[in-house]
Length: 418
Image (cartoon, rainbow, N blue to C red):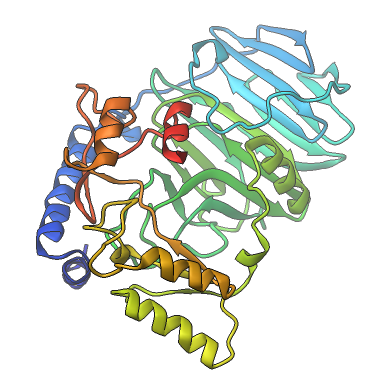
């Protein structure tokens, strides 16, 4: 990090969080960096030992797909829909929960399979998959090659999946990135990271990484979704040129299953199928489609009332006012600062009757304070994320040291909703 960037981050943190919280955050950042670089449980991908799968030894039909054996390794190819296929290497060794899958029941479809020269072909009305004897997999849409995956390199803890990029291929997706829209020539790490309130073009990773991308080229388009939450990096081919070692896409995961879903284009249909698989957000209420006003500046209820009146007096439409941290009592979630907002409910109801909603920010960090009701209830219900030693995993947020609900647990999500 450059000195100027560091100074900017320090000044931003001091202004927004106060001296004590800013110092806690700085100390925690150094601590986090130490654990991620020196003590992280996932090994560095550069130091992993890999092996290439053996030659195909057996192929067996199964429901809507086939099971292939490559010596000690197994490959499952299963169609969920005519344009949706699951690729899963060594499924017996995978105990990974289906966190990212919303739809598990699919209608039965017709899948044809046959031996073609040195490969096996699986085909539906929408997609044709060729599995070579060396473990290569090709995905065809009619007579056009969409994607060509080379034999994977498997390790005891991680794996590499390399594919050949088309000459003109462009890549999009991977969640929140400070990269160009076309990801070709970039590397995207899948490891959600708080950049400290500010970041620059090229900084990676950021807050939200999603292991899904679209590939578009002259032959067609497709979508790939890696069903894996482990630390990983996707390296997109650096040059748009000839097929070579440089014109490759390489997915490097330090752990978890080699399991992905492939969906042929066009992009709008591929994204629709992807959201059918992983879940769709409900339609927002009508009022959410209007103008929203938000600023970290509303220090008290007088500011809130003046803001609303300003829109009314100037005849400006206003659907929602978003309140940031200032409305809370000591930045504790689910609280109201009685000194700065002594008549909060009354004012909120009045503004609501005028057609404007009030939305207050809610962070996922619960202040670790035994005197704080939400924290006490969470401890008693055992809802917070833990370290390997069984202690709560604490980190600095706006109110200070905070615990974090484990939202992978359905009981925790129910508790949070209450």
